Length: 349
Image (tube, helix red, strand yellow):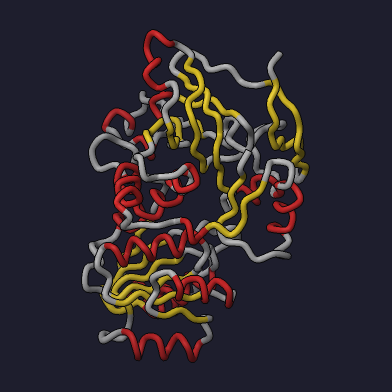
């Protein structure tokens, strides 16, 4: 039996570097030789929070690689040898939303790296229909950014066009800064970021934000005073998953402005009657956003790859660490314990 190396989540909090059977692609599937896979913020609670769908399992959904084999060469042989990135959500194609092409809203979806084994491994099998060619100027490492980049572009598209507007972002991890990059490309006049981590603040300043700062009350007031004209920002994105940041987002958005909810909240969300009243009295528009669009028309993924290939978007500055599979378990624990500063961590099998 052929084997491969992988990071296997054996039980809650126990992820190990092991040899496991190399998967075989079924009909309609491709076997991908993983070249780069990002560690997503959602992978940490999946590993340590007891929310995995099954054990043992292999996480990893932000990846790019080379097609080594297909399950049915008579149908898919042209994919062999291609450089690809992969949309991790697997639609059922039968539910009412899939029937109208809203695959990201599928009611019975699968998901690579959570509901089936993912790319923290040397190889992974995926549906051929989920593969996208990497353009010539997009490296495997950049291709591994396609999923978070598409998620943040999709989020921006949920709001009105930011051309000429003032935009604020709470949470300056990779998701928040990626969102800021798309806002800038889309014509945001001023882009201001907030985070409690000074290193993240510094990174945002170096990567397209006009200004970034720690969101202390006086600094928030000054930001509104210095960077807006209407007593608040036109569009505020909450990308941290913090209840406090959500409240601050509501407070610094001007009347008739928009608040985009991008961060996953991991604790109970509480708004006081006064805070709820701000939403009503300001007549704010709140947008939720989920996943990304992967269709032939209006695809967030195609747009991301074209931006990368043209040089309009560059994700390489986000890479703070490159790890082997063997090095990854120890580093993932450091990430959980916040004992190391990191931005985007890539596993290079």
